[in-house]
Length: 313
Picture 1 (cartoon, rainbow, N blue to C red):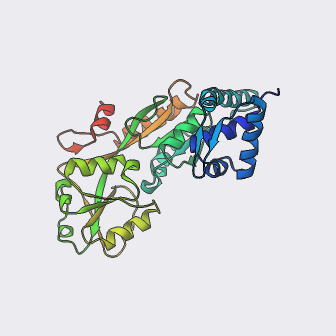
Picture 2: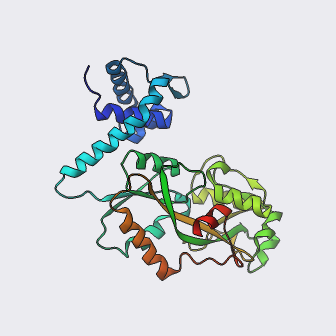
Picture 3: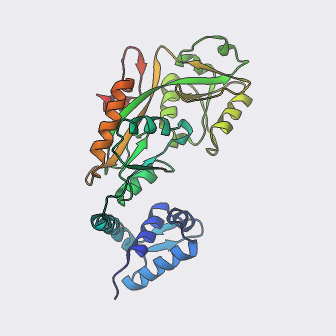
């Protein structure tokens, strides 16, 4: 029997994580047919079935579940071997997510404080995708919102707390005020850009301040979200206060006070196998954070979800 090659293992891990051949092939930048052939070859060489292929989803067999962690370790070892023989170190990959809130604003500012640090920044779909890339050794770190209960293989540190503003229809009576309290929004519905399960900050805000949620069907971007708010008479949403935003006609943006809600941004990395660039990334965010007062938090003035407040402490 021939030993499995890394392309076969990479295809297997991608399908195992995505539970879908099409999405896995897109992640690997190959055709769905190529992904299927690689896994079929791997199954032939191992003499076992690794996947149960259903009409709408893919499930791991017992053999597939046993292979998944060793396959991830083999891919990480392969990445480390390639890095070891290169004449110069490749740029550290930093994956960002939460694109509706423009995380690159903070990343650009932080990296400007570390001109000697070579970083390749790229988009990721969500925290789960970043975690999978870190496990595979494909990324050095990630930047976005860390959700409580995320995988135990991840370590994280809060690096920025950003106030959020309320966006609501300009003709609503609440828009006449210069500023609003979060409790005032209980008279409205919080328009979400996606399913609440993917938006823990907004869901926790709504639960804490008694603001009903109006979930979205798909995240189609900021313009689509603002269009929805404009067309829902009792709608509102929350956006970072420093987000560069040209307010469209028919909408008003008002700061929130008493308390000021803070959105927490974090740097995440692999707990057991931290990339050599992680300490430099942490220093860069910390240095810029001190200058910009990114981690300023007063419990008597501000509001953070409980897990974020504990992380900060």
